[in-house]
Length: 243
Image (tube, rainbow, N blue to C red; front, side, top):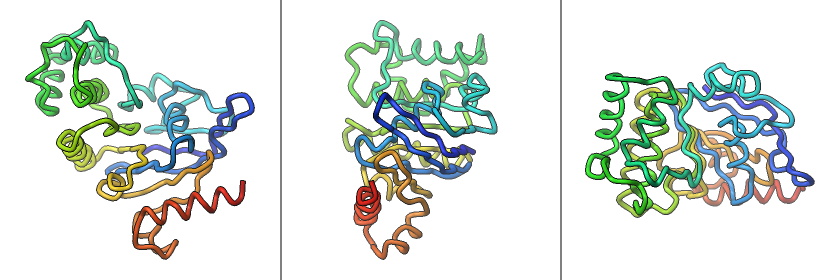
């Protein structure tokens, strides 16, 4: 489970995140939804332990992101927005390198890398250097790196950005598979169709604040709207009117 309690993060005069709180549970997909600049990526970077919050706390699998960053990293797999690959390494070498960083070695490492390559259907290009890969190929390899150590918690920042229809479809099926395995999936997106297709819980953020949380049906009922896009617009408009 991922627990976020009142985290705030400021960059100079800009308060990117303002007392954000939510919970993402195991065996469910939680969508972090908001317009560009809403604070989604900053919130995820705090959870990745790349940024330290100015206030508040967050725990992943019971580990505090401030006090035990190494345990947090072991408990999660992260796919940041625009995650880069080492271009002179092959896809397999990129994945194996991350496996070694997580303590996998020898036969155990090889089995895990083979398994993740099969699961994500990377075999066709596993031995190629990643320089020149398509966006879909890069995303699959980056996701394989995130999953190579078999984490319970998976954080995805706009994972389908730049993917074509077939690659997007395949990635969505994988995300649903992770959920079926009982993992905790936190998915950042601004694509309403994606959120509607995948998410069990939704956290809408706007202007660095939580505008609304709940299941898709709960949010539709609360805002008296059948369309999630209308729910989204009304939630962020309400926050804008208060700031």
